[in-house]
View 1 (cartoon, helix red, strand yellow):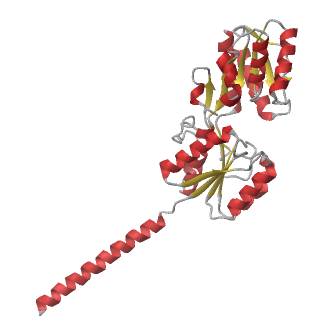
View 2 (view 1 turned 90 degrees about the vertical axis):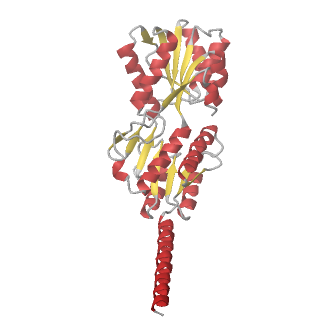
View 3 (view 1 turned 30 degrees about the vertical axis):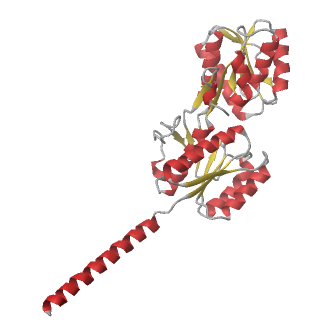
Amino acid sequence: MRKALSIMLIFCMAVTMFGCAKTDEKTAATDEKTYKIATVVKESSDPWFIRMEEGVNRFAKDTGVNAFQKGPSKTDAAQQVQVIEELIAQDIDAICVVPIDPAACESVFKKAMDKGIVVITHEATTQQNCDFNIEAFDNVGYGAYMMDELAKAMGEEGQYVCMVSFLTNAAHKEWSDAAIARQKEKYPNMELIPEEKIETEDNVEIAYERVKEILKKYPDMKGFLGTASNDPPGAGKAIEEMGLIGKAFAVGTSVTSVAGPYLESGSVAAATCWDPAEAGYAMNVLAKMVLDGKRGEIVSGLNLGVPGFENITVNNGKYVNGQGWIVITKDNMSEYNF
């Protein structure tokens, strides 16, 4: 009898311990929440942001996080705010946004943050209501990089001109000013003519017409540095038409979907930009770090584990810069199909 009771006691203890273990496992599994992170872009059908979605999807696959991308059907600030409003109303943990108009998003971002939603922005260096804003590079470094590429194409000598979308565009002004400073510092045999920057309204046809005018006025002009995405292809079109391939060169911010034919012909020597796929991935990395309680680890020198963001700098506690600029040429353009 005593032996039977002992056996029953041991059995009951085993069942109780097994049950507790299973309960602990279930509790642990419940505690491991799968975050829901939405990336909101300027326009869902834009090739640039289709490329960004590749990075967002790769992040989701690598981490198991429920990360996805949304955006308005056209580049409209009000529509983008509406997309963000709809996400706030859902069970969302973080939003990563490329604002069309940073100022127009301040109110909706504050609303999100007040609800405990993490807000990460990109291409929004003036954004106030965000946990972090991340850029692929600092503007001065990027401008210098563009000049290095133009100097390489020009053989470090000859006349060149700077093109901007509008003289009031802050980023284009910073890039072009930094490029000119780099030229004066490092390439003494190059000459900026004319001194004033050329406005193109980020329009291929306007850039094309302006470059033709410049080439007629300055027949020895050798280089065109464009800050807007339609500047290099506009310049390339003029260079082709005037039979100056190999004698005049366009370099600057653009992408394969716009500059590809001119990269192929050689009228555009190089298109500089950053890879939106890596920027999308990096935004999501920051969002997850904040959600994981690792905000304090986001400091200068941190490696985010993303190409171009291996040694970030952080200014004023929340403005993050990488060194993520890339150069697209005839030889590697197939790798950057955006």
